[in-house]
Image (cartoon, rainbow, N blue to C red; front, side, top):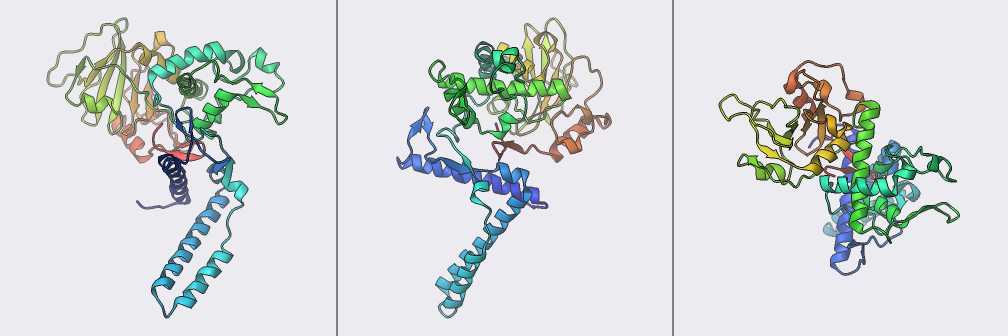
Length: 400
């Protein structure tokens, strides 16, 4: 891999920091030195290494990269001193000088408050079933304050002493999932200790709390696409549990896991016949059917269907994510990249061919909504040229 920019080095650094902390926690758990919290190893410290500041202030990232580089030089010099008897004193002196004069960023910029669940992950893996169940819980417990779209502009919220956070903003991505879990479980408090949001650990199960988080991420994606016509944060194709009724021999690899292949999903309904895609070796085609759907006969040049599935939860979850109501979802097509990220959407009433303008998840600086040329070839090339670098809680992730 060639690192051509500071961003590449920062991404590598943030990924390494995250892996280092997660690995350290698992080692502690394996040695019996970390307690358990909500069924997963608990982070035993009050703080964790933070990536948030480095994403905002590149000077901090430069200083840390420089300090790490000089530290590596000091370690190399010390190693040489151990092996080279004649030059030992000089190399040891060089090591001491480097260590003494290396400038590290202020520790307050590198550390962030942590919770016992900071490194916990959802056992559902962002599934359609979890999203649908999470919506039911959200409507019952959260919508009164946070509003159906998550923006928190309800009369109850406006009358509160402390306004609730906007769940449709970047908040969900500035915090790790495990820290969101902690806030929902134990509530939030102001600087004086007064409760600003009640906790639900006594009334909801751990799985309920994770389902709420999955729904909030899906709901934020749907709100974003309704507001600005794009997903402002990456969103994965949810895990689907329905089996293929009609499938190719590769369907097992296609559905579990989704990663590794581009997937084209067509939502079809018996009430509104869909236009099925033609065979394309670069894509796996999945039909998510609402009711009985007649597939075209298998013959040369006919549409190629790798999987036909029925799942009410998948239909509802994709309605939430795409910002399209359930009754208007039939005929919608979705396209994922090889890593399972949803990248493009084509609505039922859009009769044009796929084009780069259908990409709804890409960097704002490279968006070109007016480019309708090039067809599917151009769209796939644009997706491959700009892979998703997902930032969650200040760290780079490749999956959700």
